[in-house]
Image (tube, rainbow, N blue to C red; front, side, top):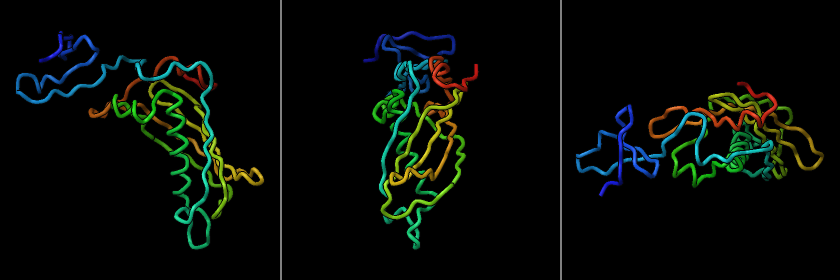
Length: 187
């Protein structure tokens, strides 16, 4: 039995639980697909943050991270940054389980990276990530990778991300509350 529903101006069917359904599946005996109704500027799963968001992760350089000279491959740094970015997203209310349920994902649209010094096999690295510039439809995360022994700065990286609602692949505006979190916010 279908939930109590109504139609909006676009012809999308809404239920009282805040879901909408594809009209294509209506009345065909097919299983209805549903996803959260996204209103521009907000999403219920995204945390209302009141202070800057930062996180630090720790990685040991493994054999699979290095080449025959025991120096870290450039692509391995991006894997380490991805782990830090995933933890950062969780602090912003977008943990893995929530993203899986809502089908709203932060998607990397640009990466800028500077390789300053190489990490080597067995090094312990600290990856510090923070929310940077926030715009209407995208935001930037900034990262520094440092060797724990000596605190050497190895990598700096910035990544631009957009929130994308799947399965449609449509960008979603960022919550207005995010604009106040970064020093470089744009209106």
